[in-house]
Length: 123
Image 1: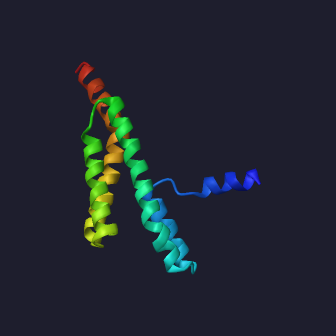
Image 2: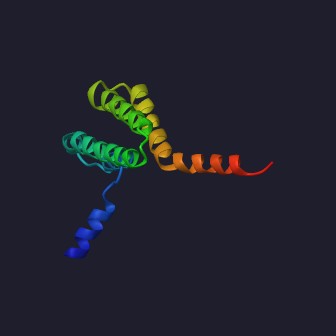
Image 3: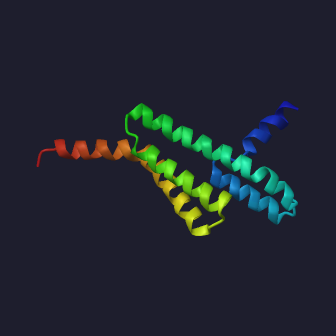
């Protein structure tokens, strides 16, 4: 029984985009629409909040809040574009901003360290 619960947790999506892919997969497999509608919005909102929290924690540790603000803007656009008004271009701009913020949050320090090392190198 414990192995089943561990496998179930491992199969859960870890990001809002993965969750959307799971919902699409379930819908194409014939899962009723009311299930994806009933659980889709709350779970998407929860996973989006978790993604934002991770970016905010990383930003707080590094003392740089610009990636967190970009992520918050992306999350608001995702919410407005998909969950509220159903405007696809707004949704995709929000997803793009969230991806950029995540990458910026993860790799921003790497680029800064490389620039610092290049500046220290003798010509």
